[in-house]
Length: 565
Image (cartoon, rainbow, N blue to C red; front, side, top):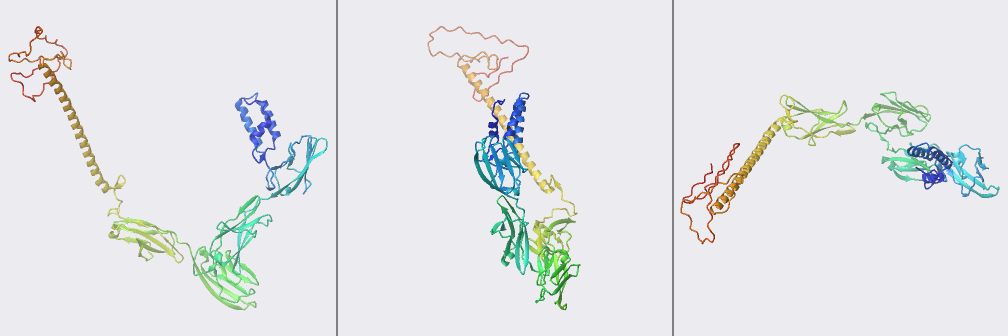
């Protein structure tokens, strides 16, 4: 739990002191702290901390920036009072020299005659929202509680409105192109000109004069306006040279139909009429009347299209009269406007074993179609369909088509053509999403390989099992042979075999007993009698012991081994 004796000033400095900013709501913080100290006795620690956080958030939104010399209109800021030790009993007075705005504190009471201005406890002057009329110098005077002046000075601020977004206008007169940056007659703004986002002029001139070479570059131009606190840039516009109108024009082109008459004084009467519509451009007495937007008459009487459209196609007649009303020239001009050709697509159709390629370009009737095979033209008959022979299909070559009109051309993507369908026009049969015959050739081969692998594994397993059994049998025979040899040599034998059965008796030779080679030093042991037979078990009869192989010749007069019964 936070100690209630914590100083509110320390909490204020911990939450809101930050570089060039200072808080102007110390009184509010102290009030919230007192409320928090009172309420924390009735609330848990978690609720107390939450209440403190909300109090700090509400207080933080009233933080004001220290007033700089140059301010954006609408900013909230504070002019700090340089005097350090300003007791509340001191008298402080702020005066705006450019107006009658006064903020005066004396005896702890504050009086102001201007809304939006207030004095803080430390004597600083706060603007809730600065406006253009707040621009100017502000003087301050500080007196102690005895009425003696202890400090005085002056502060200045300049308030600027936000820069508007300008627009670029094009003016063409006598073949000279001038760009004008329009920003609503603001006098506090600086103008800069850009070409492709690179600054080309920073002379604070709202007009930019372009040479004929710059116009023919068809580059985008823009302008920006700024003041010390804000900056805005216009949209880029492309300045294009208005060429002389040809007979065939691309939609959106800007061009001019030149008037053949040479000596056309501005007092002459000139009239242009579009025969396919009611478009009329008429100049008489120096005044120009027109019924169609996008058309204008130049000073020499030529007719200019800002952006030609399909409806501008047709014949245009011109008539020229002198200042006395006598016709001195007449004639007719024709233009044809075409839309840009779209990018076509190639579609494949297979019916009854015949493959047909179709060039799809919508419902346009003004386009010419050409067919290409590996980028080599093979048909230029303006036919959107191309019939392929079986030999051409089997070549698996890429085909494409192009559509064009007198002013534009577009080509489709190349696609390889390979016929995989049946002769009756049905779709090719598939298995698991792949061609049937390919899968038929793959599956038997894969199955045969799998079967061969299984057979190899079985053979290896059988051989391993047989080898293991042979190894175990050899080990049993070796143990029996060792046991048999030990019996003939007179060595002691166990009474039971490894399986827990009684050991079989040692067979006796029929020949005469062996002559001892050494003199016996001890009395001859009493001959043992034949051991009694093992007790027969009623439950089960033990299996007979294995019989060793006859890999060596048996000794002479030696009977074969027979298990005991």
